[in-house]
Length: 133
Image 1: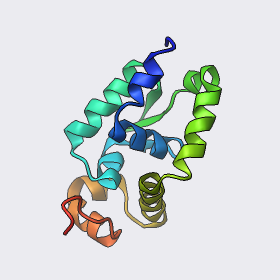
Image 2: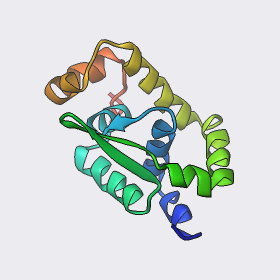
Image 3: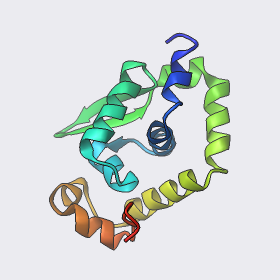
Image 4: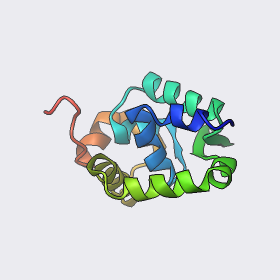
């Protein structure tokens, strides 16, 4: 990855929010879309862009594809990676997203629940609707 690519990836709020989650936990697309309250197509588009530039990587486990921060991104851009971690810890949106992730991790919900009953999972985890309802 060249010098400019990581900064292009950081120019979008949704990608920043995805990185914040992935710096804390490997996740599948359905978990990301549920926690961030974005559509599956939007999540997939951003994940593909991050993966193409090798900011993130993916791996399969059974039927699920998980996303994680690419090891080379962490090592080749260590100062940037450390800076992001520091900034995420002070950003209200990132803190809120991590709180949602923690509630999900502590719950008994699985990826199958998200796939089959997404609205019920969102309601049970007390994840506010992006429309403000």
